[in-house]
Picture 1 (tube, rainbow, N blue to C red):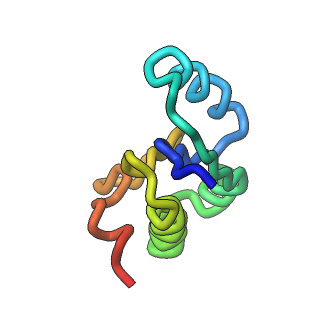
Picture 2 (picture 1 turned 180 degrees about the vertical axis):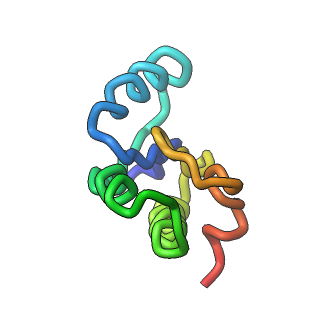
Length: 95
């Protein structure tokens, strides 16, 4: 199995198309592994705020993406963790 060069993590299905187009345009040789958790936006809307549970969920997704040993840090699309956009890379590697 080829090591992925990029690991986009999507919170919405429709974010995959523009991200894929950007990879094709700017890094066409990159092997991509996409991760989708399309209930993130729905769950955020229901809760009204990003709390500890949602941050933990983002971190778990980031850790999984980092475990794929890609050439690039995990890329979160259509997401924002208040005060912690994408969290810190070291957080993805903690056990």
